[in-house]
Length: 117
Image (cartoon, rainbow, N blue to C red; front, side, top):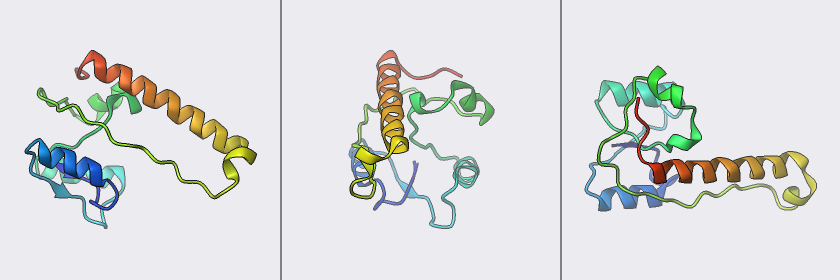
């Protein structure tokens, strides 16, 4: 299973290791989406992805399919902003509202089951 660096997603690493997946960290030099997808395809690895956070057609475009036995995973998402920015920035409030909506939608999608492509 291909994951971001452990220090970026420590709980995801812990949860997937607990489920028995063999984990491989994405190299620091390959952090953009095309590099991750290329490495995943080249090495025939799986990668965790929340279906509700991407457009369903993206899975098809990238030739991805959902793993048939997906473990139930959750990880706390932190949005870090400079102190005082949340109350005073319209953009920050909009971003928080958008993230909440997408996370809720993703949670609803995960309760319905895996995305079929």
